[in-house]
Amino acid sequence: MEPNPTEDRVTPSVNVNEPPEQDHFDAAISHVDSSYSSGVLAAKAAKGILYSVIETLGTLIGDPDLPEHARSGYQALLVSAEELRSRID
Image 1 (tube, rainbow, N blue to C red):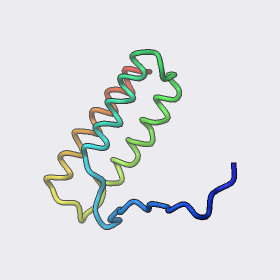
Image 2: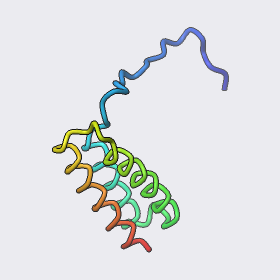
Image 3: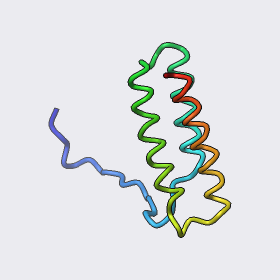
Image 4: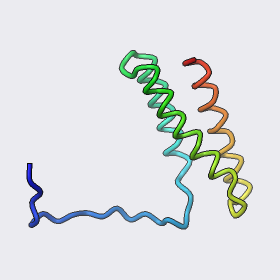
């Protein structure tokens, strides 16, 4: 399929100076949990996705410019992702 050069491309507005919203990480973790539990997602795929989420959360938590209230939210999500990963192992 060839791209249509006449199509309008929508570029999402993302502020690279702001950390991602915590709701997105929570939704990703919940989605992996429900997909793995229902048998739709294989264990290795679930662990791979969780690895990426855990690494990203770890990077965000290590940011010295991150406000403390945001850091605690990301830490709670990190614990949740690690617990899910250990249940899958």
